[in-house]
Image (cartoon, rainbow over all chains, first blue to last red):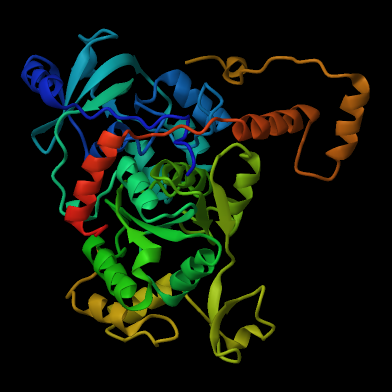
Length: 380
Length: 76
């Protein structure tokens, strides 16, 4: 099993007396209400999903990540992890002060303020996403950021209440689980869609080389037209029940707001799965991309800049169904003309489903389609 | 915010000139744009390989976690 990124799994979840004291002290602290996305980040920071980060980035870390794709320690890190707050909230604060972070009116965490700093939103967007085009959802989100950024460690005081707790495992838990299952090698699979046959073939092809597959759907705010979280989870349960060996597959969720940062986010996703204990990570076509902002295989090419990542990427070309082969295959294996190919286009499958059309079994398992159709509106 | 020229933190190391020339030849036609970027790549690779394995959990943690995993149906 690989070491956590940076060598140590971060644990900043307060327990016992420490937690009780933090709850009592929170009353006297400056209060900041955080968004769903930031609440997820806080939980991920505290539970080691973002190891070695222990808190939100200060300006030195942010500069380093934006310009070098590394933390100041030279450790690979590609996505800024930031919290912003209204300037009025921090005007009276000094470095070293604590803040109380609230989510939906409930105390979530405390933050040890190291630095409050201004940053240019355009520079942040340009480096993170490689564009300033506001039709990119990540750019649009960054351009809307207001106030001031806060850097500093966080301690989780209360778990955010979530709908899918039974599917939520933290890195310590997945590491114990993989060990219990006797898996020496584990491939991580990131998803934000119900599975079609292309996904299944990618996972099963990877399984030929490793002991287990860790399906890790991203749960959280999505784009309009994306599948709802419960639909994705139910669809995967149906697939796993009928088509996977129980001893070879595990699914748990990752609460996280997608940034759609393409290649940079692919590296970040790999680091997160390394922290969960994966030795390998699947990178397909246009991983974490959106629209035509990134080349189809940019998210694979970027891995050549990170020989020290500590998790091995498994690159896949797109799978498709070939009518002549009568099988799911890919361009490396199939000699037939493109006319014979049926592509696993997510857009096409979504359109079919939204029009009430059952996708052919060459595209999607009937059990998966059935789950999707059991929801009157499966889309966000 | 630091000025532009302070953003990239680099320092100089010395290598023998013949080795520098060999590396220069070696990286022609590759994605490496300089001897420095190649040397940094190789060093990072070596340092990552030499990282020691570290047990991230104690036996106590493990038993507590196993209990939850059993309750959730992940293990029998």
